[in-house]
Length: 189
Image (cartoon, rainbow, N blue to C red; front, side, top):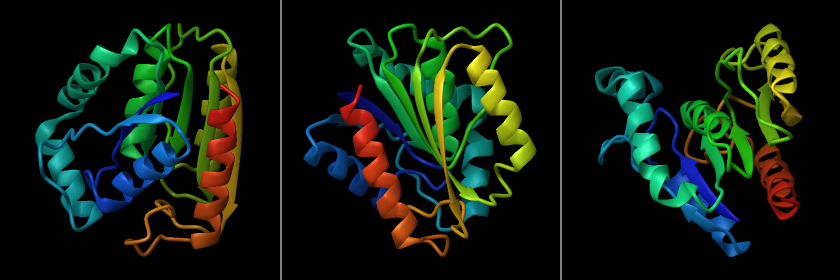
């Protein structure tokens, strides 16, 4: 599978590259665009400042530009938190998308979205203040109405970005379960 993997608000941290290497070791081709053009953040606040300085529209433009040379072959769009939001935006708009692998985040689903059976796997902490239950229920219903085949995995007690071993949110057991389920999901596409 060919995967476009987008980083979180922290930028392209080592955990993003480690995740890409893990996916490559399983036989996947993985692209990891640097949407922050070399910047990384030491805190979520610093990451939000970088994101806000660049702006959402520009981040989407950069994500589209990174995916465009590969999208004709049918990509799996994947990402961490902010990167998951970007992956969802691109995947929902790309009729050739093969799947969505969303880690720690979602985004608004356009009312007119139609994704015809697109496989979607979401991994999220439980609870997660960034992805509250009422929002996740609304998101799930909207994705289902759009025709997506959605599966959600919740991880009780994990922090928001629990797959990143360099952050306080890290939960090694939840992260391992996430990667096992993700590799199984990708293998089934």
